[in-house]
Image (cartoon, rainbow, N blue to C red; front, side, top):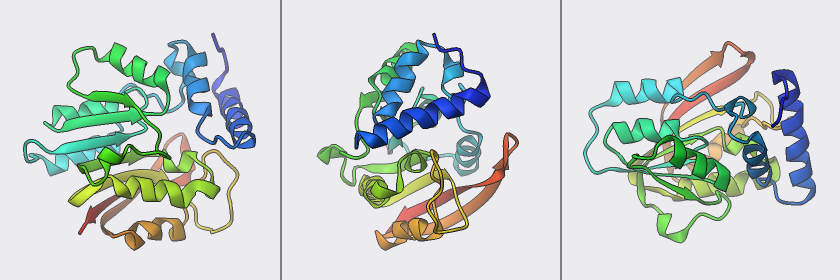
Amino acid sequence: MLEQQPENLQFYIKKLATEALQKSDPSAWFEVLYSKAKGDTAQIPWAKLAPHPYLQDWLTNHEPFASGQKALVIGCGLGDDAEALAHQGFEVTAFDISPTAIAWCQQRFPDSTVNYVVADLLAIPPQWHQAFDKVFECRNIQALPLNVRSWVISSVTSVLAPGGTLLMITHVRDTEAEPSGPPWPLSNSELAQFETLGLQEVEQFVFLESEQIDVKQVRIEYTKA
């Protein structure tokens, strides 16, 4: 069982991410982190065991939703965001690259209507192309390095159906210079790629979190014409 303290956990994650980058497999470290946690959620820094508050806020302010809409949760982690969407009546598919994370979701929510699957954001299944009315992306793009950023943004955009909504929560940076990561916050030019790919920004909400008051974060709602 890992017994890292919070200040050491960030160092450990950076070590895992660096090793994955050196092996040219930038997302490999997620499975390592989940498997070595051995069921201890304290070792997964983004596992709050509740929906992201700004996803829940968005859902609350936009209900009711039309029935039968299909939603995709990217990098679903331990499943709380996917469950929140399912509770609103969406037909939810949620994926993570980590088989351990997906098994953890299925264990936590044995009676869930969510379709939890193992998949890779860098190799999206072709049947998902333009297949979802709602897509939720929370801090997955920022967890991957800049040399695959355009690829990842294109993958996220590709699954959204015409007329659909992408809701994204991410750290952002005020410079185009490459940051030290992970995470690697998104720049203005990187955010602009979404509109280049056919999305239109509907709303942008800026917020800070108490544990990271020096890091600007945004929730952006996009629609696909």
